[in-house]
Length: 543
Image (cartoon, rainbow, N blue to C red; front, side):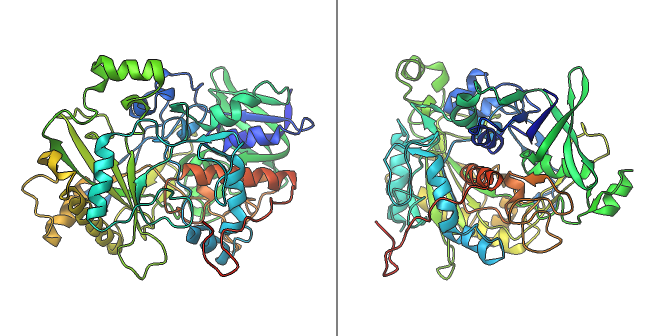
């Protein structure tokens, strides 16, 4: 085959969903291009082993430029480079975001993206182990489960949080986000459930689907103002793949804007500076970068109560191999929740995480022993960054300027978050496990504003949720319109985290899967599923 109806660039959280949904119509042909390889590494299926994939062949392993707001540090960004993309190496937490996120998109002009519009797509993709209700679905491809073996430490964290004034919340994806609880995860029987395993693998036998791995897109081909295909680098050289209907970009918040720029779609001065012909002067391509920044604290424990050394003990290994339970079934960040630092806020501005282990240097550092970690991350950052070209070489990594903490308001929210997680750690029954504070270093007085800010600038890290670098919106200078179409070029859409107007309040995998579900219907011109009622006629949440 020399041409397909749709050429999809990127087999990640969105691309696998698109490929599966579009090929449900046997008359439609789809080519799915992926720069990485198959998702066959053994660490992919073992939930707790996700950080073992970092800095390896299945990771783009990006680095930001030195970040002025973070003491000039270059921040490490793991991004999935295999079938399933980031859904094959993330921490599997299933969080959709707040109603206010989607209603905010709608109210800003993205018609069709309000909460009641997108809820049916979340439900359609889902097979929730708890069953169907007003917010959840069953029978979809994506298994969403309760954790099989959460640590006793995680339950002690919840009890401590309630002593610190938090309320329990059994479902962050229902009526309200606020409160604390154990996260649901994208797992099936204690193994990772990625979009590759849930959506793509069942579709691979369809004759109308072609998947090419180790094929890195280098530019979108445009003729007469229309996208007609994609050029890609393969081991044997460059090849061209033609699209009869549309090219769909699903490479993520870094790769998609980079590919648009390489294709001549972006800010004209930047393109000319690299000798690239300007096809569409689209000044917002690569701008509006947002990410969730996290601050943490950690404690050594009085006894062997954490997951430290689980890979060297027979019991945990046997529990995983025989029953898919125990520490290896853990997402590591087992518990957490959402809070508002100001009661006047319409929705939470911080998300909390708890891990029954010391998570050192993105899991790459050696933990000193048994311990536990708490984190708080900024849900709606005011700071903005950008992605731009390093050169016209399509194989050169893009320049990432995250812009962390360039707005003082972000720093103050994280200061409040740091103090709240330390307050939780000081409550029983969690406090009885702590023998010494590991971070912040014992000499750091976080009650002092200057010291707390300095600690955050020196230690804050990404929580791996970059978005919005090719955002949709109603204005003529927005990169994409609310139907995800790239302005200025017909036959070209963006379907990944880069098209989200703002980063959602929570983990980004579930919203991107929803996005791809809705995009498939837009492409097939199928009417949206009926809106689900989530409030009673009196305006109270349905329970």
